[in-house]
Length: 170
Image 1 (cartoon, rainbow, N blue to C red):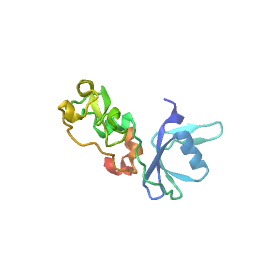
Image 2 (tube, helix red, strand yellow):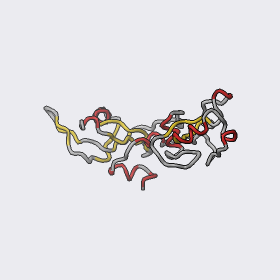
Image 3 (cartoon, rainbow, N blue to C red):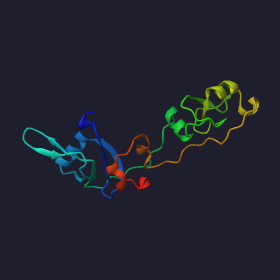
Image 4 (tube, rainbow, N blue to C red):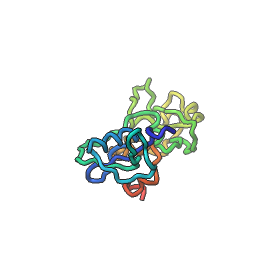
């Protein structure tokens, strides 16, 4: 793995996890005095004239305001919301499909409240019918996930150096 592409945790001035960037961007922020290094867990980066520590966690020198991050409606997000389980039979599988509870040809919309994950077998059984017409029941009603400032971190594997700075891992 290219060392300059390694992930670095970026904290806001108040130590709130803000973002994940690569080592190259973190070194630029450090060099310009816009951030300070809190943890160096990877050694040093050598150039022709100097040797720089490779950061693992940096903190910005200024506070960044950011709005809540609303999660996009996508296959990946639906599967994560449903914990990779079929919403009809409860089977855990990585071979899931998307299913519209009220089929689109019957006026169903492509929204968080109408899209669920379904195994291939249940999706074929339900076909273009509503769950009631197909004689199937949903294990739980679909709904939009609540906005979370930490949604950015759901898709990455945190490094051990990040543990003290990410509250839900401790």
